[in-house]
Length: 285
Image (cartoon, rainbow, N blue to C red; front, side):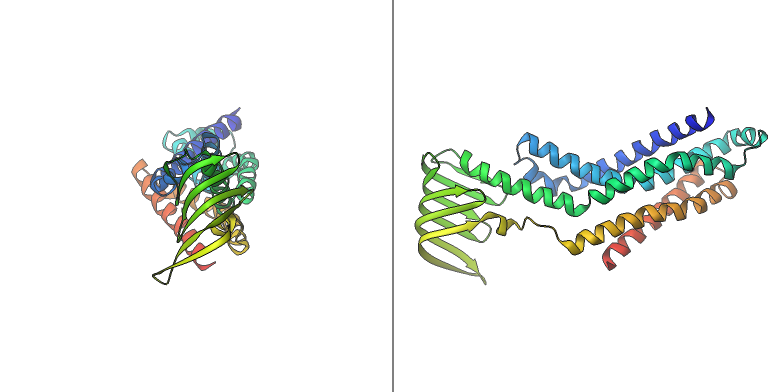
């Protein structure tokens, strides 16, 4: 019963801390991702936010577990419950070792989650949803109305089935004017119009009979294999550092920490060192 009680207590706090850290990052980055989140459909927005938060949750879980075990151990020590447990022949080392073994499957599960859902996967999902919603956005634009989605602006004078008439389409550094346009999968085909292109701070205007625009080439919907490999390596290092720091962290709590304020100071320093190392490794990779 003791092990079940302690493992539940540690897991509850670890999950709560990981969720709070993830939510804090979401709030900080909301101004960066909010623009296209609000442009997505409700289903796409929920899918992206779920992937975004799950990726962060897996990243912060080792940190949260380290803090949670440390806090639980300090609480047992502060309220002299550790002495009672020792009177039954259970040393602090045995207590932590068995508790950690019980929590190891959860650490492994979250490590696998962080391995299969990296920053590159979240970035790919964002670009894919943007591409998918670009196509839906173009078809849903009301006639005789300027409509914007992310960095695209579209004006359509009239529609006839899948054919768009008298179209103005602006995306990044180019503006297309055409009498007709059709969309097949991720390709927009313009007929009889002109292209205004910004290059080297100069505008160039070209007339065309037919102009094809590949949306996926503009949005670069693909994995960066080098960054994907880096993200997976960082995930492995993230979980490995936890295993290395945990005995040191708990030893300091057992021998040096006497008050809750000292625990907070030690935790803050440990977290700064922890994530500082990860940041340096990320920049060096």
